[in-house]
Length: 64
Image 1 (cartoon, rainbow, N blue to C red):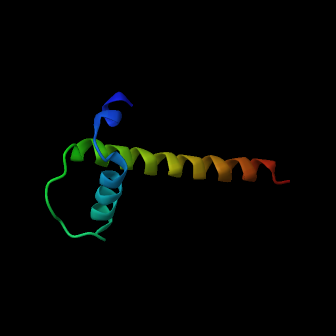
Image 2 (image 1 turned 120 degrees about the horizontal axis):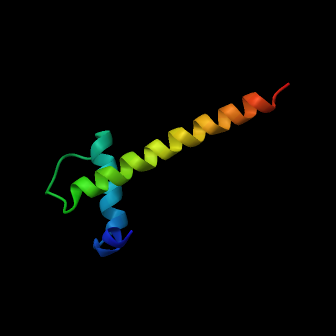
Image 3 (image 1 turned 180 degrees about the vertical axis):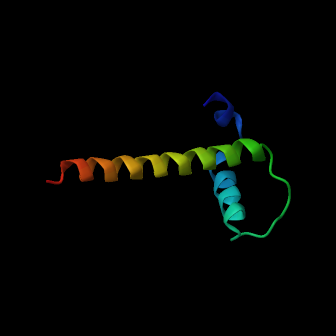
């Protein structure tokens, strides 16, 4: 968290990197801390997948 707080304009950079990874934004100038930003996005997507699995398993277990 401390490293993220040091990145100036973190949120706009994160959104730009996400768009580039999805192919919605053409490659442009190099973004500082690109590896960290990509890692944050991968971790966020992994957490979403994990939450979806837990949600389905919970509802499957509670259905008679």
